[in-house]
Structures are given as structure tokens and as C-alpha cells.
Image (tube, rainbow, N blue to C red; front, side, top):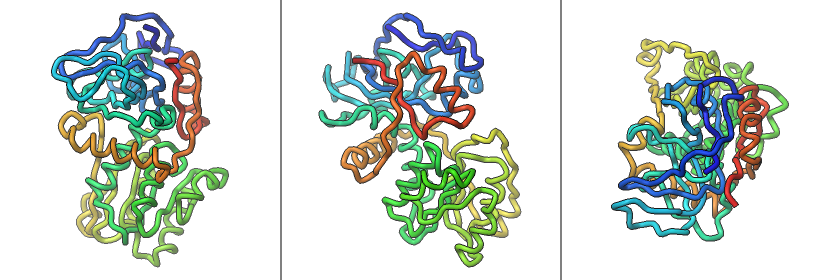
Length: 329
């Protein structure tokens, strides 16, 4: 099969298109003829060696396609059935493998799709959608009276978190973007939009000094610290990533005196431990997307051969909010 392979971790050029052995399912698994594979910022970290995956490996943690083969013990899927799958259940051992014509997923990380599902659009919402859904519902326990502040609202994870919070609905969704040029990209789903440099003053003004109830933070850095100080009593900070690369320390005393909570969530680290919750979130996000309730923008679709260019765009912050690789016919 054809795949994008990383033999030695490094820059985007480390991704090489090559012929490798066909992936085959083991017990509890199924193989998928991949039509589309989502590409996210976390994939650039895998490629660069940040997580120490053994080489050679094939990146890609979200795919849509059709069942090719089912392994022992798998009875709920049939060959040819359209499916969507997460490939980031790393607690079971090395997974990933989405940038390939054939990928192997665990049955518990896979859901059937409607025959008329838009496979490209679905491939673009799986990881970010499940991360946002589980964070908002299982960690933050989002309430209709909550004010939600989303850092990086114009990005992939921040964008879908904003839209899910609006659908819930939260009382108010405040999107934080890096510049005025990015305001139009989040205007539809956010009640208010502010530029990061104005975060502290604007949140104080918008909430009359009370602060926000939930912060969705895939960004980190100085923004995380500023946002944390604007949490209302019983407010919840959801740490979902660190795109800035700056892990700013937070004060335990500030959490204590302010009655604030800090919660982290890494889907890849816990997916194998909570498969029922993951599948529930998968079904919810895919269902909302398929019905048009969650109005996810159409992703950019590029051929597998352009994967290195997509990684470069993600790293220099010029990529579209979501890109998927077109792989199978």
C-alpha cells in the first residue's frame, strides 16, 4: 500500500511517500480502505519526534473510508461499510497510520457512518470534535448559563469547541483570536470576539468583572495565564494543548483563593480506558455534523502527495482551519 512514512523524525520533508506492507487487523480490530485522513497540528509534533514514536511510522490519527477486513472478535462491522475511526488509542501500543491507503483501527474507536455521509467533512471533525465534546461535557459539565472563553478560536480545535459550545448552548461564547484579520473566521459561532492582546481588559468589561465560567485552552503560553486570572468562582480551565510551545506555570494559591479548577485532557492518553465515552462522543459529533446542526466548514482537500506542504502550513500558522488528505478512490 502507499503511505506517507517518517523514517527519521524531523522537518516536514521527513514525510516520504513510499510503498509499505498492507496493514492487517488483529483481534478486536478492523482494517479500513482510507478515503480521507484528517491532518492536525498534533501530527506535526508526532512527525518531529516530540512523542518518541518508534520509527518508521505513518502519522494520521483520524480517517474515514470503508471496512476492508475485520479481525477476530469483531462482529458489529461488515466489509464495505462506511466508517469513521480514531487512531490515537496509544495506550494499546503504537497506533496512528492514517496517512495510508489502508489503516487499522480498534473496533471500539470506530463508528459506522450513514451511506450518504460526506466522508471528507467527517474526517475533519473526528479528533477535534471528540476532544471538544468530551472536554465540554465530561470535564466542564457545561451549563446553559455558562460564559465560555475559547483561546485560539480561529484554529481547528478552538473553532469546533466554539461551535459545540454555541450548539449546547452556552450563555455566551467569547472567541479569542490572534489578530483583527481573524475576526471574520469566528464571527458566526461566537457571541463576542476579542484579540488576544486585549484579553484581560475585554473580559473584565464583558463580564462586569465577574469573569468567565469555562476556558477552552489549546494555546498555552501567556494567554493561558491571563485567561486563568479571569475565571469566575467555580470556573473551569480546560487545558487541551500547548500550541504556543510555552508551558506557563499557574499558581496553586490562585486556584485556591479564587475557587478555580484546572483540568487537562489528552484524548490519545485515555481513549483506550474510556472507549464507551469516546464512541458516544464520536456518534454525537458525527451525527450533529451529518445533520448540519454542527455547521463545520468544509475542509481543504489535498492529495496525499502534498502532505509535507500541509505540515509546513500548520507550523507557520498559514493553514486553513482543517485539511484532509484525499487518499483512496
